[in-house]
Image (cartoon, rainbow, N blue to C red):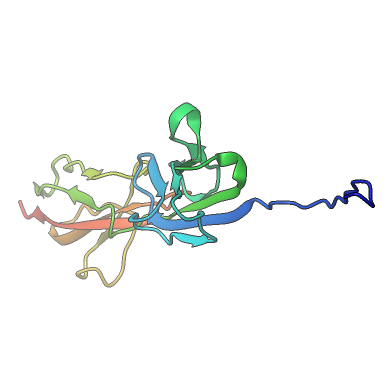
Length: 193
């Protein structure tokens, strides 16, 4: 003005980043194959977002967690462009502070997931005993152990019978780190001479 020189004042201010936290989790039984939690809306897990993108912008999560054996897995791997875990459509990623986490829990499998079968053919007293044939439809089981019953499965013995009669064989696959114990049975007969 005519009476005063120009003056000015300053102040600092900050435009804070938008903070968004994305979490997801899923629990599945052991399958023997790699399993995946795809972090994002519409998956089978427990997807949750705290915070939101600015108007006209959208958070896109492109991440997963994988695992094979029993246990919790939390290492998030980006599946987006250049391995990105997240991006912002219609805006700048530098305006955001986004945390993405996920937990894939693989639990022990059991008789619901894997079953065994056993068969033991008949033979005649005094002849060579038939051999057990056993298998499972998956899992990481070792060879089964065999027990035998002469009373319809009320009591079991590890001794293979040799006298004529009606019997039951039970194949038992011991529990592993990834699978619960399972078993299967079959009836067989040692015929009289």
